[in-house]
Image (tube, rainbow, N blue to C red; front, side, top):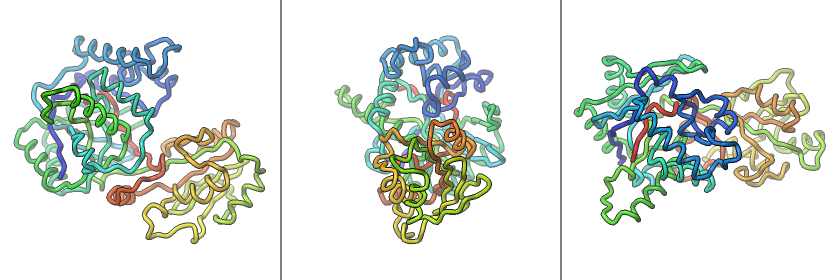
Amino acid sequence: MTTIKAFHAYRPLPQYAATVAARPYDVLNRQEAKEEATPLSFLHVSRAEIDLPDSTGDYDDAVYQQAKNNFERWVEQQIFKQDTTANLYIYAQTMNGRRQYGIAALTTTEDYEQNRIKKHEFTRYEKEIDRIKHMSITRLHSEPLIMTYRNVPRIDEIVAIHVRHTKADCDFVTNDGIQHQVWVIDNPGIIIELEDLFAKEVPHIYIADGHHRAASSAKVAAAEQQNNPHHTGHEPYNYFLSVLFPDNQLAIMDYNRVVKDLGEQTASEFLAAIAQNFEINPTNTQQAPTEPHTFSLYLDKQWYKLKAKPHTYNEQDTIGSLDVNILSDYLLQPILGIEDQRTDKRIDFVGGIRGLEELARRVDSGEMCLAIALYPVSVEQLLTVADNDQIMPPKSTWFEPKLRSGLLVHQF
């Protein structure tokens, strides 16, 4: 079974919460982070390169030292304050009328290493190095993972009662229209019951968003263990920060592809090649796929609806029947020559939150040659893949809403 643990969070004082809260480090590039950061934005911790000359490398040690200095200054200025008791927290988000309630807690690197925390994606070493250095130098787990678990009614009940009978510590709406609320659970009896419920009724926790943060946390913990001759397993570095949502509350959006060129093919040759495995129908308007195994293609200012032919998938094959795999096996690899989506510079990925307009914009600008929109992976598909210890292709899932960084921080 799995472990969650209460902790002494650093939190911004309520009057600063909305100003501090920032989008996650990995959804912004350096220039976007610099433009978006206000003086108290948590981007000064998660993306501290914005405070240094442009000539400073993104992964220079000075970046992480700057992040550490910025956070320590905010603590001194009492922008952030550490809770005096070990608490659990509820983090709720409301987007387009849909609300999800997560329990913010520490999860364990032991559960991660023993596969009680399930993964569904490979990680990239260079991205791990960034977070390893950030954690090692700042001594912070500064941005929580989004985790999920198969829902337990009693956990839902405890959360609902607490929300109904207590006041949120912070409550604000970001400029994208998403409401963010945090409640503190400081009742020892409730904390013990929730920890026991995970220990007894939640055999696995699943990473929804944050594979690189989890892998980096585990590697930092392993290094700390080696350097500590008195290691017991209970030190703070053995844990990392997560927000755990029941699976019946999470939603996954599409994660779409844009490609720079057709190789040596003309557009007509490309369409003829994909017709072997996909039914192709031009459309007068842009429309996202409405069912599994359908795709929307944008090429030469024309939208097409693609439907995978039956021979391209077997519904009994958990991985092979995923639309991201059908697209890879029957279009990206054989026709466009994109063998590894993690490393090929000809392909890029666009989260569904940006809409089909963003796909069309990137093609019409000349930056890209074509765009393909996919039908979203379901939460149940994700859990099944993880339960089978299988791996999804890269960039298969896009979760919205994103957690805001800076509302809860764990120092180790």
